[in-house]
Image (cartoon, rainbow, N blue to C red; front, side, top):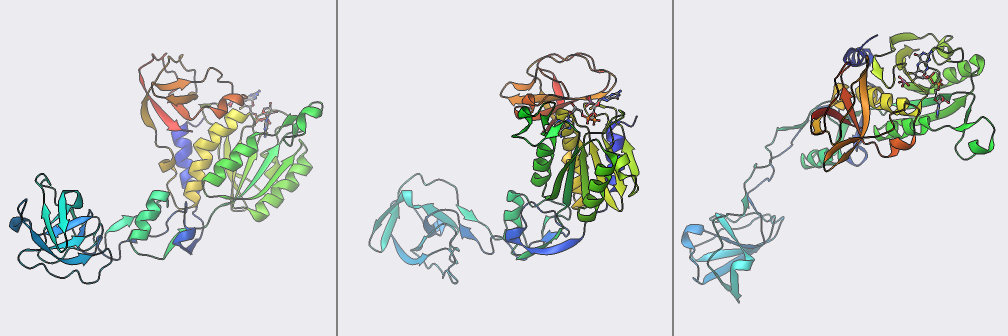
Length: 394
Ligand SMILES: Nc1nc2c(c(=O)[nH]1)N[C@H]1C(S)=C(S)[C@@H](COP(=O)(O)OP(=O)(O)OC[C@H]3O[C@@H](n4cnc5c(N)ncnc54)[C@H](O)[C@@H]3O)O[C@H]1N2
Ligand code: MOO
């Protein structure tokens, strides 16, 4: 069986990024850049005040000395003028400094009488000036191809003074939940033998958080003819098809056979991880097809470990960039692991990560509170509270 790191390498090698398009910044949130983004100018463009107060020539200013307020300068002023001897300028945060000024004294230290002002002791050594180019310079590479336009990155992109950006298309996702027993939430408990279909809801939500568009969602029973039809329709409309359930070896596990007519080239199948061993990835008619185990916890863990990297890579981002494991302290002991690399569901607290008591791959209630995955190599010994473990946001 392939190990997790090798599977991610195979995944990254199999993905071709989607086409690119130019979009206005206001529509670029969460998209992945298909270009390096360079600043079109210096920021600040000129030296500006960091405070509301008075711009002065520091060397010619002493506490208690009356000075003339010769200018008033607001943010955006085209010409901030020049200070002559004995003059200061009333200035506001963000306003350009007049020539001759090298310090801003906060208005809290000023006593104003008409056009005169004097400053009290204690305004301190801070100059309260943001120098031209101190944030970035024209031509600086603020964001790189493959970077995601997070809410923070959108600020940098806007500050670079560009109106539009070249980004990759949003992946169109079709999700197919398989299993005779599944019923839409809201009707299952009234139907003998049925259970609410839950896994695909989490998978869809995760895909949407990754910028994907859900183009179709369907449910199919354990019937090869029906599932083959659903697979064909999904491949017609989507860039990526995600199937939940039917991944294992049972007689009714039809997730791979349902792509038989279309042709399925497997990238990998079965990974030495727990939960999620039956996860598989392939391509069919040039589209990516990801098969997640039906057990809801297994489905969500494998969606986090494989679907997120897949969707990032389809958008020109880095697959491994979605798998930044951090070193975090354990708040409770962990038992030894078995022969598969194990991803333990845990909750982050002020004391560290608390593993959930229910680690069943079919469980659903613990998913609501498990916000981290602890990664434990195969054959790890028991681990004491306080130990550092590798963990991934979940
Ligand atoms: N003989 C073996 N049996 C199993 C193996 C194995 O290696 N040999 N692997 C086990 C492991 S590990 C997993 S994980 C499961 C995964 O199986 P499938 O992907 O085939 O999942 P299903 O059989 O379709 O369903 C498993 C379980 O989950 C429920 N389910 C399915 N889909 C949903 C959904 N969308 N929402 C909510 N619940 C769902 C389903 O009713 C079953 O209870 O296989 C083991 N078996
Ligand atoms: O690989 Mo399965 O998800 O452990 O039950």
